[in-house]
Image 1 (cartoon, rainbow, N blue to C red):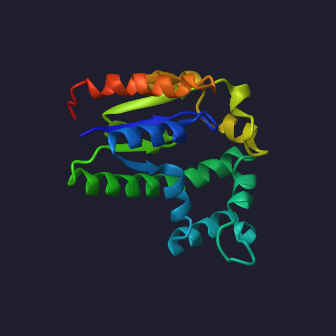
Image 2: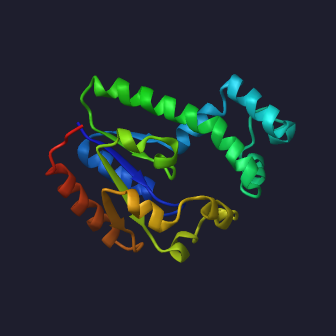
Length: 194
């Protein structure tokens, strides 16, 4: 059974890569951003976040966490981001490990994508860790207005690459898919020791 982590900075193409790999392996795809967004709906987590950041993060119409408001706070204040990460990362890790454990029983391969796989503590559970290496200037196209603030809070490309078992170049052309398929073939031919 393969557990493939796909990581890289914002806008690098990690979710595109993870989708393609999951499709070709008929694997379960776990997206850490989606898990994080779902956890924001948990009443206990919501209360903890309100306590940490005030009611300013609540959407007055939906009464849910307003991710944009929360993002504006944490991506302009490193201390606030550390607080958010201290609250959310253990919960994201716990939920992800529960999903891995559940799917291990089915013997299905798993693909996990997220910018902070290593920081959250998921990397040691992966049989392979793929980093997407993509030029910063290309990544910023079609990205949210706060792209630079988010990118500055993430690991550098060198840090991503240093922990990877495989690096895929994303030139934002059709070469990206070819590069993914080449690495996927390598992974399929490597015996799994975990």
